[in-house]
Image (cartoon, rainbow, N blue to C red; front, side, top):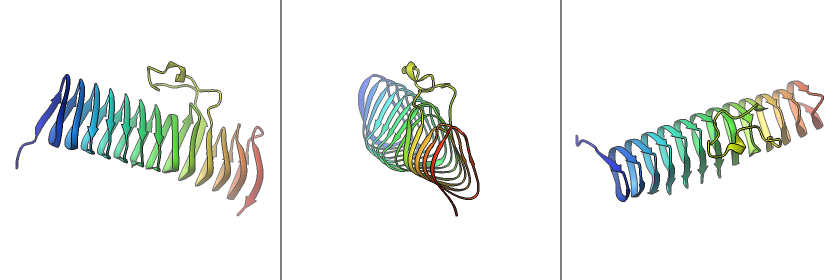
Length: 243
């Protein structure tokens, strides 16, 4: 079996795609073609004209991938732009991520900002920051602490908890204005549907679930519940239907 070689870019340089062991970019580097590697790390500026498949991917600088990304473990502590879809077994976003299509995987930990032009689907999502999803936001377990205005077209899951956070531990050191919860931090969605739902500071047209808790700051068009409904005095629910 042929041994994989490393690819290191230290200054301003370009390289071709291929199969590598470790890919390290610490300068201003561009790679033309698809990359298949065991480890991908960027502490500078990287531009990938293709897709990336990696066992582990770490972005601490600025990276742009014009194709898709598939990684077992992903860490974004800088700025990452994926123009295609991103799939990661375990994804940790402490910086800023912009996904051109879908974001999928097993576990997502968000302590930064993520914008997804398609769907966002994980088994477990823990978020403390800003999350913008143009399509479906779906998770078996969703725990979202609002730090900034968030939105999704639809939200689905088994357990859905959306609350206002108390402050940011690490949302982009170069954006100090985001260190504290914004006054207008709230979730907006057309439909929220799950088994157990707890909401705060949420605007939605329809909320549907078995056990539903509508907390402070919510403005809900219609709540449809099967077993239990609890409403905070500081919320607005226009219509209620027991299924």
